[in-house]
Length: 154
Image 1 (cartoon, rainbow, N blue to C red):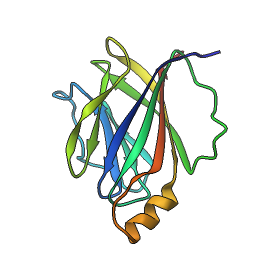
Image 2 (cartoon, rainbow, N blue to C red):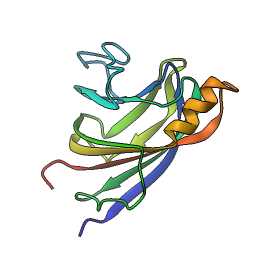
Image 3 (cartoon, rainbow, N blue to C red):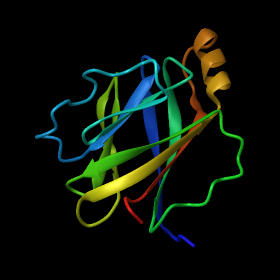
């Protein structure tokens, strides 16, 4: 059974219904965030990049990032959306990006070096974030993401 190696909590500043996770050492990425962002998909990818759409326009979502040594068990939580993808990291660190504010200061640490990963992105609170966007405007923590990384092929 897979074991949880590490867990971090970071904020994602959502702007225009979107945020992204991108390889921290992004100088050689062919499509840097937010170029070619696909707003029609909950989770879409480019090399070294994960693009995530949100239920709300402008708010701060909470992100729990987990690193596992193998495929994590399915969480019993009722998620609004869930998707999986492949992710390649050269540095072992992932930066959180916003359409409004650019790169955040915090990084998600996958390991001491790069590698190939599988990732599962789960989200809850999308309707609440959408309602907030239509009413008050901005808020904090109504939408929550669980992002689980594990080595590809594990």
